[in-house]
Image (cartoon, rainbow, N blue to C red; front, top):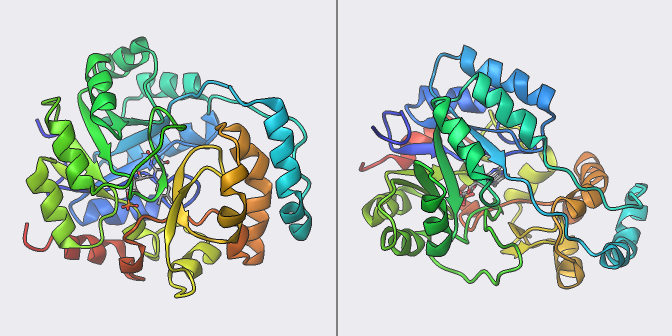
Length: 338
Ligand SMILES: Cc1cc2nc3c(=O)[nH]c(=O)nc-3n(C[C@H](O)[C@H](O)[C@H](O)COP(=O)(O)O)c2cc1C
């Protein structure tokens, strides 16, 4: 059985924090592609409502979960970073939280909801959970995919009993799913990461990261992926929930590059290189979700007031090819030649 039930070997990657909407998922499914619904950042109640709505569509879908992270931030490093970014918060009239806040993104509750009301596919990112959770999701009837970024992570995921992998290359937009946020992430084409992973495991896999057109899709399938997931290319589609500030930045020629930075959330993520990332990247400590919570209101205010230089402008290296066109058209064009 294929990992994803869709006519075309194309998926919309999960994009938490607003970009993935029910309308985007519906357009993706209508185009014969597979839609991932993100659970990240949602309360258990909000996720329960999303899950019910996804089931009500009657189409197959995947749910994406953030695996809980160890709370390891050094309080002194947190305070120093708070001071470093205070002028940015002051400029936007935002008070920064004083204490580090840790949470598990309502992991237990979300797994319990999925065990009671299983999604066809559950993908995991940011590492591996306890084996018992993978077993419970599988026993409930879901195919469980782990996001991996190296052959070593792929081996660990196979040992943990998953059904398949999402191989995410370092050119992907948004957070890296790496199990070790502190590791040096070096540039590589996603197709090369896919080939390296197929050298260590026979698990079926979905490839993601840096796709800018149909040739990239064909390369990734030829490298051994069963399907290709795209995120950034859909960010400017009218069905996406991308903020106006983020959309405008993606189309603004003043932004000329992307970078991997943990300055916004304490975990590496690829974003357009803006002033906040440039100024704070070198001093930012690691620590997700503590930094995510520290900068959240600041980033919200930046989005609200149209300040692209204090917002996390998640973008993969293919961002210049992201068109302002309906998602179905974007995906149909990507499938050219398949
Ligand atoms: C705005 C945005 C939000 C994202 N949110 C998630 C998420 O919630 N969970 C996840 O596993 N990956 C997330 N990602 C990463 C995507 O799943 C995927 O790996 C990436 O978009 C693929 O690279 P591309 O953006 O170059 O197509 C996000 C990416 C973007 C651009």
